[in-house]
Length: 170
Image (tube, rainbow, N blue to C red):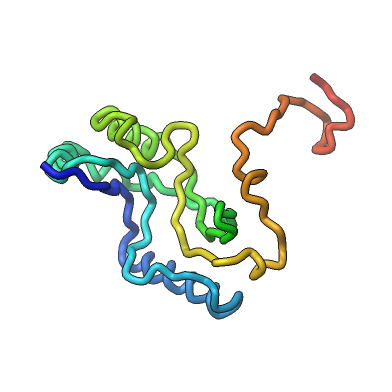
């Protein structure tokens, strides 16, 4: 059997696809022409990209319970994320839910983490991609790739009486 890269993803219904298309067009209309639309690509939330053969994927897919995914997707805002090439991804963030995490875990358990091509576990960041700006100057701001994708921020847990943490309780 020939292996290929297969995408296990949640695909919104047609009416929401149309709404996302209109959001994409708003970016083109309001922010300029260097916004890349993905044409015939369906809007989706990738759960796992797996290097496997189609027959194994079909067998596994038949064991999943699609009805368990109802009400498991909650959107949480718009994200502008710099890429290493200097462009900027525009995405709608999706809250990571127990159902999404369990679905991803099942796929990883079945196919093995070595065959997974996207971030998993704590690094998994579910989202709906609207498109990509070829440059960051459409926003007239600087979006540094490395700093915004830092793996370890060196944060400390603090408890304070306000958001300035002038009075540290703990």
